[in-house]
Image 1 (cartoon, rainbow, N blue to C red):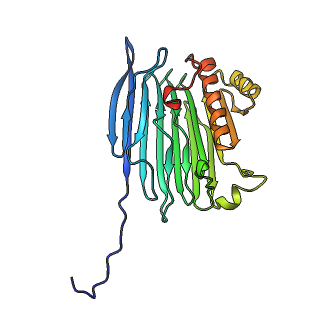
Image 2 (image 1 turned 180 degrees about the horizontal axis):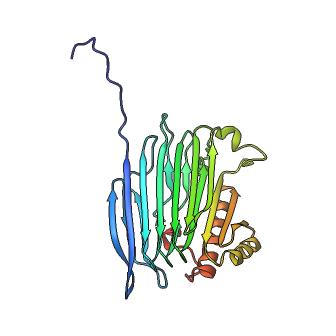
Image 3 (image 1 turned 90 degrees about the vertical axis):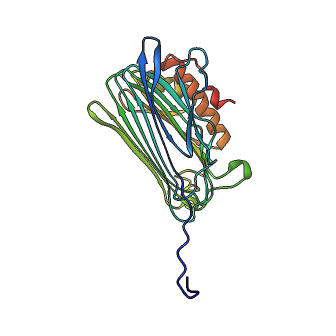
Length: 276
């Protein structure tokens, strides 16, 4: 190539991870029907504790996500199946040089199926740009317990998220159509996270969503435990927490254990991946 030829633009290598996970039922209970995984995502299947349904552990082998990385995640439960999905550790979204980190998740639950979507916290480094979208389809009688937690900066290192952007959108649909829609958008973290009538300087936030007939009873239990819980509509419970990263994780974990035991017939404890 001639020395005076224009230099080609430099392009960083980007991750394009995916997984598809499907569970069905046999006479002996819930069984794995389908598994597809694409690096850097991997699914592991630790032996469940007594009384627990099959557990899938999601692992990002890359150790974190950078700007321009993309993840596509899909979980499908056939009628009557029960399963729990957790992450093996907290997810990290690193500072971006410009592009968003894109995460798309689709959960599909057949009639009478029960899914626990319980990833550990997502840590947003200063300068991270994350665009995450969740799509949920619930058939008649399906139950869903879903928890998501965001940490704004590396709290243990004293870092706060002052630059970057966050978009986190949810769409929950049932047999009759849209049940709930929600979106979090942060375009100026330094200002919005510090706003006294916004996040009030909170290090972290968490959300718990329960779609089940027991939602109203669970609202009262969570309120008694100090959570801000409400019913957007019958059969749908929403609870949120804001505050320090450690207290928020502790409160969300206590709520998970409470709801698992009282609404889903599971042992009233956190999944093992949350405590090891």
